Amino acid sequence: MHEMAMAQGIMDIVESYARKNDAKKVRVVSLIIGEMAGVVFESLEFCFKALAEGTVAEDAELKLHRTPLLGQCNDCGWQGHIVKYNFFCPKCNSAKVDIISGRELRVEYLEVD
Amino acid sequence: MEVPVMENILGSNDKQALQNKEIFDRNGIFVLNLIGSPGSGKTSLLEKTIVSLKNSLKMAVIEGDLFTNKDADRIAGCNVPVIQINTSGGCHLDAMMIKNVIGKLNLAQLDLIIIENVGNLVCPAEFNIGEDNKAVVLSITEGDDKPLKYPLIFKEAATAVLNKIDILSFTNFDMKAARHDITCLNPAVNIIETSCRTDIGIDKWTEWLKNAVQIKQKRINER
Image 1 (spheres, helix red, strand yellow):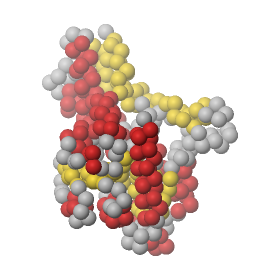
Image 2 (tube, one colour; image 1 turned 135 degrees about the vertical axis):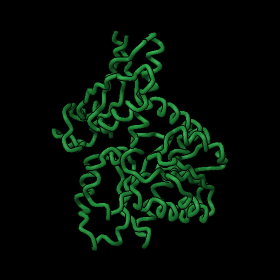
Image 3 (cartoon, one colour; image 1 turned 135 degrees about the horizontal axis):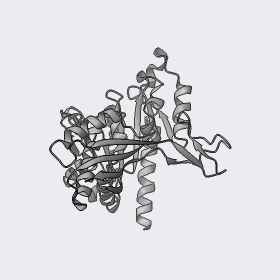
Image 4 (cartoon, helix red, strand yellow; image 1 turned 30 degrees about the horizontal axis):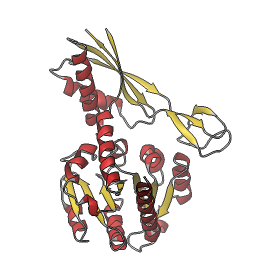
């Protein structure tokens, strides 16, 4: 249930940006959440709604943008989707595959009035 | 109106974790974040670690627990400084909780701090607390399917301890499959099989820790 801590993180960011932009109302909060981030979106939504009550983000819609788990091989340059969490390069079997996407936990943008 | 943000949801935790790490670095302390399910043997492994390393390293323990002092009481029995953090139901330790207690330790006197996280394979993996390394403890009674079910912690861990191997023959745990899955997830991981009951593998684990402390202190001293 760390979704509550994450919802609080989102709320802090939303309130700070709403203030900076003199927003009366936040309509949309768009999130980027990676395939490998340990988040249950429904729980996150539930926690966010509870926290947003009575704030500028009350009634705001959470939009989810999922990013796939992508890797890049430092030895042969392969780039692609990492399947079944196998981080060995499918082309050259190197163990030096870095994650280039899929771990994101970010607020992307807000739509405000 | 659209307002671009692009901010990390756990950004404030990460910032605090970095500040904690700077404090530990300044004092030349290696910090381990010990993570595993309830009952995987984290506290037993800690007790064995303390007995083995107490004379060669100055160490302290921070115990994360939902409500009780049970683990801290066990560690206090080993005669090392121990601090209890109760999360009151919170499923993980975060960087601010660590910041709030590190002042209670005599940091200048320490080589090693082991932080036993709340028993949980999911949430602690997302929250850095200022550690140098994470280690995950999986007991074989939990099943060999767990690495792929909880990939993040196995990806993040520097060492994976497979505990309770003394009872391996009474279970259907497939050691080869578990090792394969953990290695695929994290090719650089160090896998150590242990039993806290018979002491199998405890020497390998403490050797790894001792080495990690030495490497860090050497790096800090060369700065």
